[in-house]
Image 1: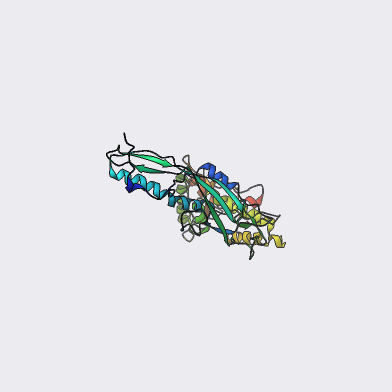
Image 2: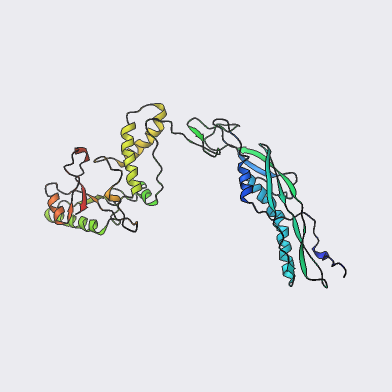
Length: 355
């Protein structure tokens, strides 16, 4: 039998095909070429461009080595994918599954030049009828390409010019790609950022002492609050009690605890290295003042139910006459647990909880 003939319609320039499976091995190899930094130095914000050996002219200004490689192989990969799509559209062909190419042997020649290879390289060829309608893999080999690294700019909080060095008060982050503030104040660390979305509502003013979160108190606490307000109004029509603090998320409770105690530690510290931390803590202390007493790290205001939903078990109520506060609280199945404390500074006469 004569050898089947290749379909002349399907002959394309060789080598312009590859599917890039950027494997864990390839990713790991990139981490091995991480540049060492001198003290205080961080990476440039580089751009990466495929140069010699590459097939495309469009892989310019990429943000990383991986992105530049992906750009190159995506372009070449489109040829093999086109092979599959075209032959499948003809119908009736038994199409082979070709080995997919991978990138490998990534290495750094110098800080501004990388090399990598891609293999194996295959493409599909279809036979013309009356030969069997089959499409087979053909090819092999590998390609080599290089990537030029072009320093573009330095990250934020760096000094002008190259190399990129962190400004005073900043140090490289663990990845060596940005400069982050350093805790230079030995007296006290800076306040943690609040990320809890509910706690942020207390910072942005959605909830405040004039508009506390009553909705997320448990039913017993809400009922006790309503009862106390009603009974005080009935005995003194000129004075209406007001809730000044309801449910507080645990993250917010921890925040005001940190604000209070860190301010006590740093308020008399006038050293230059603590000035920035002190100013940030004072701003928060002034925002939350006045403090009737030292806040606890945890609070009944922050309780949750068995499902983890907010269910605050305490409420602060102002404008309740002190001479009748305990009697009225008792009539409303509430009590004041934080009066007559061993340390008078811990007294909190406006704090009520269900019995």
